[in-house]
Amino acid sequence: MDKAKRKAIIAGNWKMNKTPKEATALLNEITPLVKDADCEVIACVPYVDLAAAIEATAGTNVKIGAENCHWAASGAFTGEISTGMLKEIGVEYVVLGHSERRQYFGETDETVNKRTKAALAAGLKPIVCVGELLWERECDITEEVIARQIKLDLWDVSEDELKNVVIAYEPVWAIGTGKTATADQAEEVCAFIRAQLAKLYNQDAADAVTIQYGGSMNDGNADELLSKTNVDGGLIGGASLVAEKFAAIVKAASK
Ligand code: 13P
Image (cartoon, rainbow, N blue to C red; front, side, top):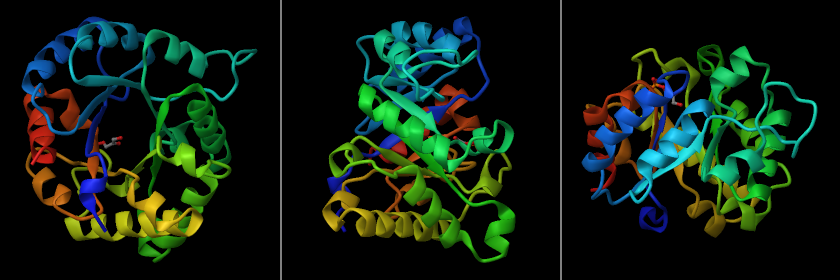
């Protein structure tokens, strides 16, 4: 298992926070703080902030991601955004299957899979989120839940396409709750995800996939989480909205 084979990626998921003007201001604070990062740095921002975010990060090492995309190229899907629209303005990443989309907006593994395939076909890099509910962990079915999500969300994704996929392990009970998974819990599930990828593809392909941890990751716990063999980065909610905290996590990943 060679951690050095993989790109460390720290991504902010801003969720429904920041107007375009606020996005520009926050990115103007973040960019100088992370300019020497030895990892990939991404800000995934609300749709209406994307253009401002791309402008604010032009010429920097910060990449911009969206928080969702639709699978159809165009059509009668009121309120949705296509991969082509994102691509045309310079978006590089897209968060898919976040637990908040699954919980509040009817996202299923089938729709996550459709979005993932569409994103890959358009040349976007999907950050596919998986994770168990507290109830599922208590019932000791975390591995079944994760194995099912990985298999279904990546159904029909080729080994070549897998190179552009990032997986985010986000235990739902740790999101926005201040309850972080312990570094050992995060490592256990991230290692399990890699083992599933090895089964579905092969060990080399699995070893090359960046697997992030997400769920109350912050400047205080990032070091320990990121020290684990299979934790290759973080998907950061709350702490990504504070420039110094986000920069400290980027620094932890750059070691
Ligand atoms: P928090 O870091 O706020 O717990 O959110 C995690 C998350 O959902 C990132 O996608």
